Length: 116
Image 1 (cartoon, rainbow, N blue to C red):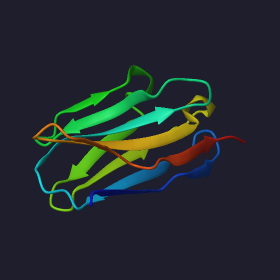
Image 2: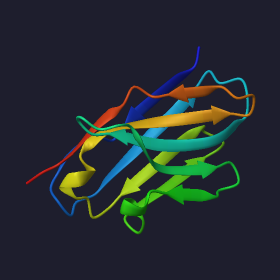
Image 3: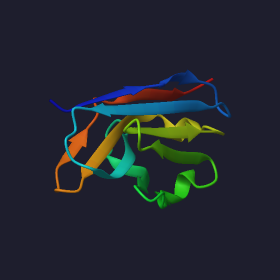
C-alpha cells in the first residue's frame, strides 16, 4: 500500500523558515515527478514547486527565490525549504508523487501558518 508521510509544518512568524518533508513508501514503480501543492481556505489547490527525477525544477512565481525544492531518490523523499515566509503562504501543503506508469499519489497535508 502506498503511503506518503508529510512532516515539518507548523506556526512561524513572518520572515521565518520551515522545511517540509514527504517520504513515500510502498511504491512499486519509478517516481518521475515530485511536487508540493498548497490550498488556502476558500481557494483552489495550486502548485508551489515540482522537481523531476533528473532534478529539473519549476516554481510558482510568488515563491521563487524564497522556496527550494529538492529530492532524495534513494529515500523516495521530497523536501521543501521555505524561507522568508509571508502570511500569504499560510495554507495546507500537500505533496504529490507521479510515477512513470501514470499513477498519482497525494499526501494527507500539513498545515503551515505564518503569523505574528
